[in-house]
Structures are given as structure tokens and as C-alpha cells.
Amino acid sequence: MRPRFWLIAWVAFATACGSRNPGLRLTTLDSSVQKPSNVAVYFTVDTDAGEPVAGLTAEQFRIYEDGQLVSTFESKQTILNPEVAAEHFTLLLVDMSGSVSESGDVPAIVDAARAFSDRVGKYQRVAVYAFDGRPDIQRVSDFTARGASVEAGAARLDSFRTKDPSTNLNGAVIKGLEVLDRRLARADAPLRFGTLVIFTDGTDRAARVVRDDLMAAVDATEHEIYVIGVGAEIDSGELGNIGRAGVILTKDRAEIANAFEQAAARIEAMSQRYYLLGYCSPARAGVHEVTIEAVHDGKSGSLSYEFDAAGFRPDCDPTKPPRFSLKRPKPRVD
Image 1 (tube, one colour):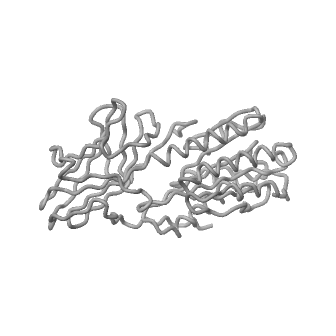
Image 2 (cartoon, helix red, strand yellow):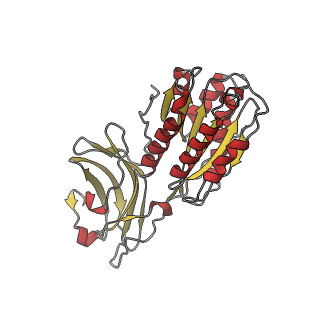
Image 3 (cartoon, helix red, strand yellow):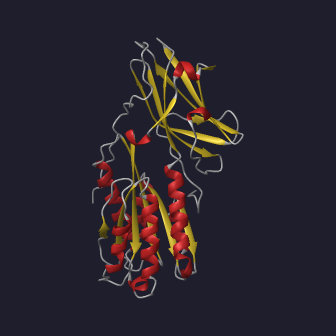
């Protein structure tokens, strides 16, 4: 069953995660083991209800090897900068069909897109594209460097000229996913994640792409997809099917700014749910099970996996960047 609204579907890329006590859910994304005795794990922390948990410190994690607590003094555990392991890209795709461009809402949309891009751009690389009834989406601003100001790029929406007043929503979603595929394929980080955020005030009218092809693309992608739907013509069921990571829907066009703000806040929180924990293992040989437990607000959760300590020795620096396997997504072929 496809999740609705802010119910999130999580994907575990490595080991299955467990929970010693209900409350938190830890999901392993990748792990690294390298000499002299470095162990690093890249993972997310969420509540059992699917809410992201941000801002945890190294002291809120406990590390166990073979069921025995590893001393923080012995392991030198630390939270590493996750930017050494992963890059995150968000593409904001804005409906600029005739019903939008002639509605008088463009100034509000431009302001909302600027605020969204500025907030999300502190944590991710953000690009802004627009669509109308044409087959292709139109680039407004390219992916920025993380933390760079992106307000100027989003402001270019104000000068966008609609050339086909129809709404090619289905085709725009597919094209947006393709842009993310290509950008992630060029990223240098071993782990990369894409998010597509779509703003629209209606449904597909152009009929350039049939619904089955749209849903096949949505089902096939690993990117998160959010939808902001505003206006009297939105189809909550259809937009809910597209926005598998979450949707914000309102009939009130005066709520455009608030809808964008909600989406930005959600993505900001999701950006901070990623953790890269490194430590120095006391093991010097053999295969061991490491368990990482997080504790927050009286809740806890854990993940476990095995590693081989063959050839491990002292003089470990826990801040050493991990070596994750390169995961390059394959660009979609038309």
C-alpha cells in the first residue's frame, strides 16, 4: 500500500535493523571497515511513527561488540561529518501552466520557492525547474553547491514565460526523475540521494504521458517524491499516488507559502536524520557482531551487523574518513 501524506517508506540498503526497546528505528545505509581498526556506519534515525530524529550526539549512542558494551574511552566513538560519505540533491519542480501563470499567484509562488530553496539549500544541493504543457521541463536554476544561496535562482521563476498553457504533469514528473538520475550519476560521494518536490495546482491535462508510464517511473525510482498541491482542481488521490514520500494538499490558494514551508521543514528534518558514526574497535581478529544503540527522550533503537577484524591493530584515528563502496545510480534511458 502506497503511503499517504507524511507517512514515510524507508529503504534499508544493507542489514536489517532491529530495536531493543520500542521508540526509535535505526536503518543502516552503509558500513566501512578499514585498518588499523576503524569501523564506521552510515545510518538514519527515525521514530517508530516515521518522524526523523535529528541532532543526536555521540554520547547518545552506545556501541556493543558481541553483546558487550564497548567503552567510549577505548573506542573513541565520534560523529563524523556525513558530507564525506553522501550528497543530497533536491529538485523543485514548479507548475507554471496557464492556470498558474494567469492566476495572479506567481509572486506568492516565487517568494515561497525562494524561501524553500534557501532553507533546503543549507543542507542539500537544490535546483529549480518549471513545467507547463510542453514535453520537456525547463531549467530555472541548476543544482547549487550545498549551503550556497539559492534565492536568486528561484527568483528567476518571476520571469518564466509560459509557452503552452496546458499541464504536462505526468511527463514533468518523469523528466524530473531523469534530471535527478543524471545529476546523481555525476556526484563524487559514494552515497547519493535524490528528492523531487512537485508544486501543482491541478492534474495532468496534456495527456502526453499515460498514467501507467508515470506510475511505472514512480515505482522504479529510488528518489523520494513529495507533492505540494494547492487549488480547487487538485486530485488528492492522484497526487497522493505520486507523492509517495508525502503530500501537502490544500484548496486554499492563500496557503501557498505555508505549504512550501511545511515541505521545506520536512526535508530539512529528513536531511538531519542521517548519521555517520565512527569508532576504533578493540577487536584484533575474528568476525564480530557490532550493535549500535541510540537513546533519545526515553526511547531507544538499534542496528546490528558483522565485521571481520582480521589484521586489526592499535593507533586508530576515529575521524579517518570511511571507505564506502561507490553506489552510482543508472541514468534512466528513454
